Image (cartoon, rainbow, N blue to C red; front, side):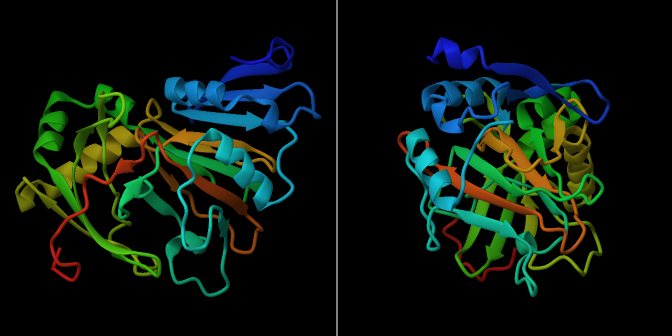
Length: 297
């Protein structure tokens, strides 16, 4: 599936978690040749790596001079999910942000496309400029397969009764989503979690949070639900925080992982580009609700 000469130019290592041990998911692929371009890696081979490892970090490659180069590469990977702004989202801090993704704040765990008509299977990121090592801004990933494996039977029973109800309004979309906490991977049928983590309680500085509610459980069980989900999803066996290096290319399985972001130093120059790519055929969002968008959540 990949040219033997190219394969001999690569090294493969597990990703390391916060304890210094290998993560249960993810792989780091490093080029031994600085002139080896990401375009020389076959898309079919990369998709297979994502399916196997959920998260693939490509480091040390020659990559993309601009957003157009990233977009052309992603088009070989599959059908690009287009937004009103185009294929590529520029993830940079705004001077006067209207949403938390354009601020320097943390971003809670979530999955992409949850409020849209179709949900992308893959995320592809390119790091245009990384912040300094002490400036924060790591992108966080949680393997929901692993979280399910390590959760107690009591926690799993609670999760299986619960559904999250999320409502969000931004410039590009406004929708309500009702998603069971425990679902199934839409293409490979193993269990996964679909959970949009609320911001920290009492954090009035968090810009434009979504509204959260939970169905199928009593109000007295809400804290136990959130605590058990966070305990499993942030367990070092299920969680990885990626410290960006300029030029990194990261490919992820959006159907299995949840992701977020750590706070970073304002005006540190953190700049990522992101493209969404559909599965074949595209997944029509099974969680969009028909309830009125202004209904109380």
